[in-house]
Length: 102
Image (cartoon, rainbow, N blue to C red):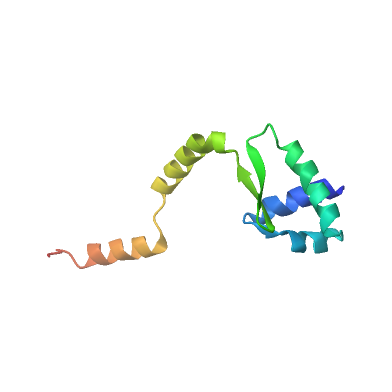
């Protein structure tokens, strides 16, 4: 497995931004070499729905801004289906203690 694949897997699994310093430690590379690997990965995703974004001294795998509307729509649909545990508890208390008055 090459360095680009390892970096890709790390960024995918992390979900959030990862410090370049930590990536260098894991890849056992200096900062300049790590940046070269990042450049390769960024080039790989240049025409993709995924982007590799540099934020100060951190790197994050993100969706392509051009796909924003589609990603937002899916997240909205997914969030409409779910109630949090706290919401379910509140609804069960309300149902148990009916009638509710102001």
